Image (cartoon, rainbow, N blue to C red; front, top):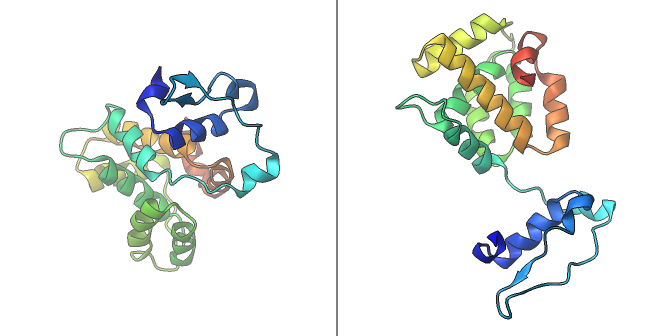
Length: 182
């Protein structure tokens, strides 16, 4: 039923992104004769590696927006920027720029602005200080900053490609891992 509302190329894309054990449940729907298409053969692992990765930034921002944690006057972009900019303070200027360079295009813009503020001495932030800086950046209370931070981190973990999440797992400072993983 949902396939009737989707463009054909998106229908195929959804099917190709499903795990193999679920892809047979998703058959593209031919709008011309109102019958399901015969599914194509599953992609081989090397074909999956060569596919371009969808720009996840819009879905990350959309997830943050729909989370219900944003106070009035704070956009998803501002929330993501506050959390990512504060996180990047744990990095040297070069490390922050490197992280920005390897991030999705829209997130790259947010991180590049933050990287410009850094020198070569990173700050070591504990969780309380981190949340305090996010709160100050967004002009909100601490508990709201924690909910926003968890939401931003959850959206990143859920929407970025697994390889990027793994890289971030290794880059997240120890003091922030509880927030990152929750």
